[in-house]
Length: 203
Image (cartoon, rainbow, N blue to C red):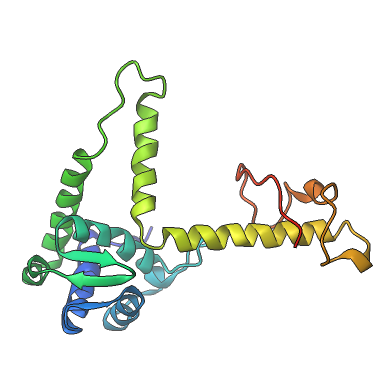
């Protein structure tokens, strides 16, 4: 099965650092992605889009791995702008695999300094620690708010569309009965099981 190697991931991060450096040390994240995509010779597997997010595979990998570059002290991110540090400029002298190994180790070291493990008598147990770890990683992703908002808006649109199918034609699109649309709640297109959607305000 095709996969993106560690060396290739290191190349993603190194190319991103180079792009930021070439633009005077700071550049908006969207421009970083656009230019990195031009500089890399991406194959079909890397360009394939994830079904859920619609994002190209290599972009998702780069965004995720760039968190390691931040923990390594090579990048800062603020307001959608990436800035390279002096340490990041020095990192450009490393090979791609060295960059991958470094950001992995720095991220692991940072992770160990975070919230301590649950005490033995905590009823949530070690499963909670794993859940909290992934929750922190998603929350730190710079596009988390945007993706979560867009997903919820999509759910709202799908639920409203489903509700309208149960109303007389002259009422559709003009506010809807609070008793009509719940029948469609579990079958609205794009609604993830267990999403917890319970109501929609009239529009």
